[in-house]
Image (cartoon, rainbow over all chains, first blue to last red; front, side, top):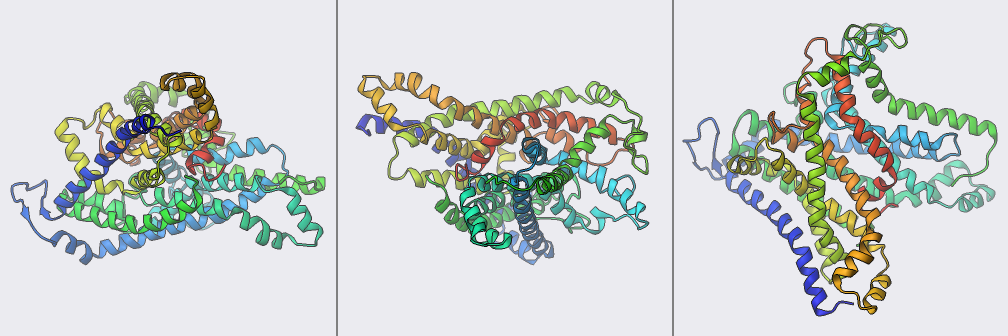
Length: 290
Length: 276
């Protein structure tokens, strides 16, 4: 059905999207690349000039950068492990013939719709606060000292907040995958004497592999850019204890007002994202039917 | 995979599932409860559940003070505006790729998705400077454009997966009957595409409403939506738990309700059709 004219029409219809995304990608990227080799501080804009790789060298020599890399890894890895493992368990539980499944789904999915600043500030203030939070009340009830979450365990606190937001996503997707599994297959396995564990290991898990892959791929895209939760709670602190790579770049740009350095950080982030994206796209390409 | 099992087991499983669900939902519930308490009652130790002083004042006060209605309105304009603009640009593209696929279509789709992986911080500086030059900082139109571009790949992908499911035979039949391209779009395609377009719209309004990077970077006060407003509230300002909760509850309620309606489409949409 692809006549010459319809092909031309199709090109014209795709063109605006392609052009916009191209501009959206290339113009800022070119500008960032340009600034990354420049001395450019908003505090002293008159002292501008080429500086070669100075901005990049600063990053690689800064302990903050390596800490930020580690924190980014901890955030993405930690949240993925927590949400996938708990997601499978909760999906298995809800998938049982339980009463009120519809309401259950509504309760479980709710945190996903809570905007990051709200999620972060509610958990920070109403739960983790060392004087007025619910966790402090629990600690006092047990006769122990309240835990200073944001101060002593800033990275874990951020991981906890982000996990709460993303757990519904993995649960819902894994639940959808489980519900497409035929019960005949499981019953047959049960009749053949397969226990609960081997049913899970040899039937349920292989069936859910695609969904698990998709959860990991898509969550990684979003988790690499986590910003609002840190901005609302720890502001990257104490010190740099909970500064991730995006937040470090943000601090260089907005707090230190060093555009050159922030741009160099941006380029490093782009290179890293490309490495990750390469593997993601290979994985995702196999699972998406385009 | 619902299977028959003993009533005892069902009761046990029901209890376990409800406990887990309530734990996950609890922060939202606690926030809503706190929003109806007086400030003193909200920070009482030990926490007050049923004995609290209940009041509606927090909502009244938050709504009356602090320009809250404006932040709310900004959220509505920015999320709906960016979604509609995105749809106008994405519908033709998705339509063309779904029905007149070329040998490069798959690569093109993958490339579009890959633009989502560009770290926002990497483009933050140029975009900030560009917006400054164009006078778009702290304007609603600026945020509409930024969020539209950010979500455009997702909008195209979602529409594409929905359009792909419309059988091509129907289009061919219409063409045989001599329907032109315009008629084909208006009378054949649109009615079949509306459910897909509607769920794409719903999901993207949710994503844009909850966006908390560009909204924080590109606004100061005038055009700030709720996400930027709540983020700026973060530093504890004395006794403010109840008001914070009320402001938060109002900020998430519209999306919570929309989201509950769209949870089926959510799975499909956010997995780009890979899990249905």
